[in-house]
Length: 562
Image (cartoon, rainbow, N blue to C red; front, side):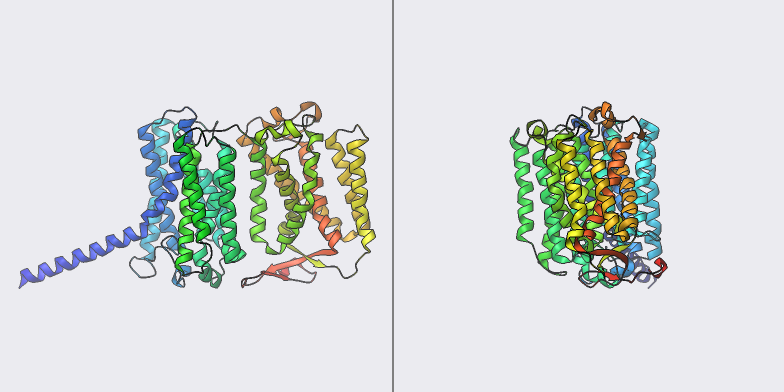
């Protein structure tokens, strides 16, 4: 009798251990390792393409770091998002968590401690790289990776609930992980092929958005401001397709895809993955169609990322990278503020003609590197159109975003003739500066924008403060962008700018002339649309957001009302 009882207890213990093991395996979500290991491998392949020999042991420790950081991410996400996962009925293999806490397979505290252990082991792997091979900056990147997940999921920041989760995921997968792989093999931060960021960052953002598509219903219920909740299901899918297309366009623009049959075949596979997404477009949360759309999006991202490491390197198009950096805050605001999208669209269209003025700046003020060398051929290039469009969108949206304002019709409208006066005088001033004077072009643009701003103040006194505040915000934002650009391209302002056209004053390496230009642009862009559309800035606050705009206007009053 005792023998059979002991045998039964042993069998039950084995069953419990087996079920626990399967639960931990389920919580580990091993397919998600592709999100981490491929960017790390790609970063190491970047190093090999740059002439650095690959070290097998370094490769092992880099991938071991990736395994640990992936376990930390999935465990911590399950721990932090358990409330959202409980009400999620449209989860998929790549969204909605592993479900081990929802079905009671594992204890929440145990999963939380497992995330902590995985984070420390990942940090230990980076310490090995530092101790053995002197790769101490890997420790910094490891800490950044750990911090990103904390900012993503945990209070008080919890960016995935505040509309910034996808941006954080894009930076982590598209910058931090490839940078970790590059640095571990190369042993230096210098020489990283920053041009490929233009290829992989849009598709990484698309991947982050696509994984939020199936969770729209539960995210809306729990008031999680994911990209799908903010944009809506169909607009979010359109943005996913647009971002993938942008990455593919950049991939073929900045690389030689015809030099090898294997490379051309990979490019064809990337295009086929995008076509598969087009065929799967549509569907609602819980449908197999949307599941396949998201899966095709993930595959597209991984293929584009791999292609960036296999295609031959291209020249360092620094102007294109400046546009990419400028697109980051523009895309963020566009996603977070649905009410500003029409304004940004109109400003984008109004900005296009200014791209043709590049010929007055080129060589005289600066000499960037253009795609297809269009600058030297025609006096302007594709980047000029990107730059003026993105700058226009950012200038009109920076003030209302920073100060929580929204546009509302003014009670007392001015005549159309009076409202057009600042624009007419500004246009006349621009013509005089470009054609009839010998004033250095950068100073001339200050004069033109200053004239427009002063006349606008005379016509609309309520726009004085918004223009000043908008100019200050734009100056700071553009300065930060320039600092990032300078990190990616050391000495860019010394090499690409005509030093004789500068006054010799710099703010951490950024010419004062550039900052003043950004300030005037911010002041002008802030007031242009309100002036012509008879609008004024009022306070706003967010309420619940049922599939439309989530902006509720407030009358003028105390900001503490928000």
